Amino acid sequence: MSETVKQFLYLNRKAPYGTIYAWEALEVVLIGAAFDQDVGVMFLDDGVYQLVKGQDPREIGMKNFSPTFRTLGDYEVGRIYVDGESLAARGLTREDLVEIAWEDPETEEEVDNIVEVVDRTRARALMDEADVVFSF
Amino acid sequence: MSDTIEVDGKQLAVDEEGYLADLNDWVPAVADVMAKQDNLELTEEHWDIINFLREYYEEYQIAPAVRVLTKAVGKKLGKEKGNSKYLYSLFPYGPAKQACRFAGLPKPTGCV
Image 1 (spheres, helix red, strand yellow):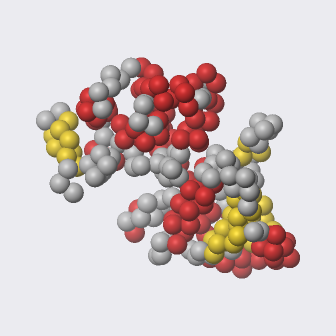
Image 2 (image 1 turned 120 degrees about the horizontal axis):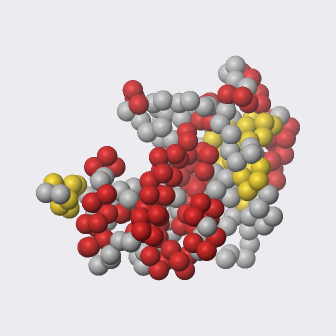
């Protein structure tokens, strides 16, 4: 495959419905992951709503794509972060969010949930570390 | 969108690449008709994959990319089936692309 593996970080900042950003971002992440890059995804601001469990957007004529986030682990996206301040500001906790399982491709070790709630200092550091940051 | 395929006497709409326009139109006969177009005879092994894809879509609302499909098939149906050689022997036009079409799913995301 490609010789240089770059660290990608996708920032999801918008509510799941009402605009196409969330769905498009998810597609971009899944396509990017197919290229064997080191992919991380961070949810912040209204983007944290994308991971909320039990969504049912049928009434607004939208496809419910929240279950699709659970495939991120299958696509070997091993790093998923949620900004804790954004969660708290919206009265949400990590219990309100979907769990994303992941299996280490080398050791086959299974992790039940890789969703990691981070503080602002760590969020900034993660953005600094990434070679490429995409914001949606 | 004038393309259709005839299944059990009904005309079902398909897109320009032959994928079913409406997921809800799917019946098993759709796969048989599409397979015939591709000169394939569907066996039990084909159906294992088609049914697997439909279950995967039901749960995750997405058609998996071939790499993900391969891994997931290995887990579910046994390691000897979780490799692209086996899957390509069943679906010569690409396991994800062709099998997803037979299963009535959209074209896989991350399909390159």
